[in-house]
Image (tube, rainbow, N blue to C red):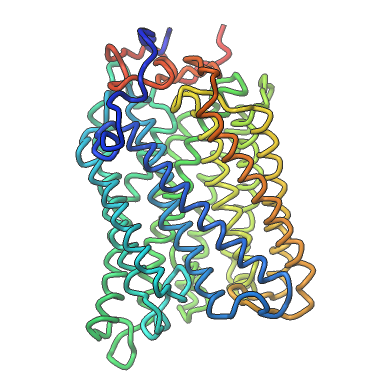
Length: 533
């Protein structure tokens, strides 16, 4: 094999060796830690989804006849907090990165295995604090904006403390991944041969390391203000509530790319395999991840165009917002060029990858409207923003994540899911997503504000369509999870290389042995040499 010697099949490998419940909780095996992240974040994804369904059910009618306004506020706070801070930001990169990075670079584990386990336990500590927060849940929204988050009678401290603790997990994980990629690459795995998922994980890890401390400090200041009465954000005490927004978005816009850059890497791995063509513009895709990461630190103020900033600052940040579209567009054009005249196979991972291209492009293009100063004044805090954000977060990150689960499922677990059922689940998920969120663009343009439990009757038809779409989406998610769980009990054992990938993780048995490789491989060729004769 050009990309390294295949692993000796030996006897059928055990499920990452040591048995028993405690062996999982105390493991330092990167694969087991990746699976524990996967299970935990999947739980929070489902719980966050239930909150969303309950909110959408309330919005079937213009009146608050199912949830009170306060309960509605609590539900969208929990929905946003769970999806952003407990599912996407810490979990997607950590679950996939933990499992795949050592395998893809020909290493036996991450650089600091014990620290890796410690990162997961820190993540669990943050989730435990969240459960404590459920006793008197916050109603501030997932952004915890001051001054309301200082004045609210709900328990804002516990949920923000949980997010603060989670930040340490992200920082430690990012540091571990950076050192692993630098120091543990196998012979021949030069920077120009790295899989694009590794490039994406590297850029994400840098963002985690540099941006996460900012939101940690911000939330710590908020906690100090609520508990000690220090006036960081209280104008009566010499503080500034807008300062909180500056700090929060200085982290949170890079956090958008912490969420979505791993999905970029996933798509870069899936498309060449199912198009049977070399990736087009390898270096452009790799370097554009870093361009996105760098520019993302300079666009945070576009969230605050209506907050009273100067016209000069607004114009500068509007330009920078448009600028970040360039490296993103480079990726989309290169993925499209990779498929051009390819021998495309429409299996479930590829369906999710194609959905990503379509949906994320809509999310990116609608972001241009929000970056335009005059248009944003009208669209700010409307359902247009809700639709845009979900086309980026779900249409981008979640569709990419589900594509990854289907693509590497057999490698993770050594079993096979039902491909036909997977395609049916994708169909419901894709259709339901668009029925749910596309009408919200029209609502936003017509002035429907977000985060309201009640609304004028003229918007009821749009809300009804959106709610019915959420039910279709939920059916797709349930079918997908049932299919994937049923696959774990399938008698059909997975082959070593189900889809014909040239990446190193497909040279070892499914699932991989405890230490991944019998002998550390030597890479002699490019990872994306598909279709060569």
